[in-house]
Length: 186
Figure 1 (cartoon, one colour):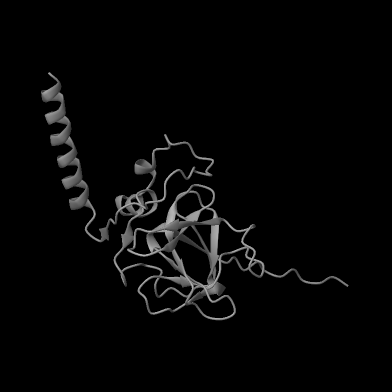
Figure 2: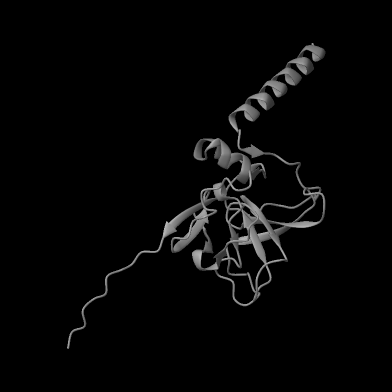
């Protein structure tokens, strides 16, 4: 009986893997980080049904730490004024004023929204060590829901010297609202 259950489990796992690869043509999955024991800082439970809330591509990138194909994201050449939010929990992450063209194939930002000088305590991001790219790197996560956003590198422009390389599918853009000015009364 136990052999039958083991074979059934292996067969089901292989079919699920094959199906997820077919559904997600533009996303490739890299192995998870070797960092162990990090706890989620999220307000969302492990039981949150992200697969119902997100598209398959958004799910793979944000929940399974995938990466979208370079030069394929909708926000790569997007220059409208506003704020980029987390696609999972709607937390404000990056201002369009901090966005620049890094030439790497992903939207790049100089700093996270809420950064004061080098202090990121009031931002909606956290950094986590990540060794999955083949060398020591730093992963960027949403502080509110633990969604994988991308990576940060130390080769960005002045004054921060940082390049936040963020997946477009992990973002949702909201344009700045231009409120009409009230006429002054004398």
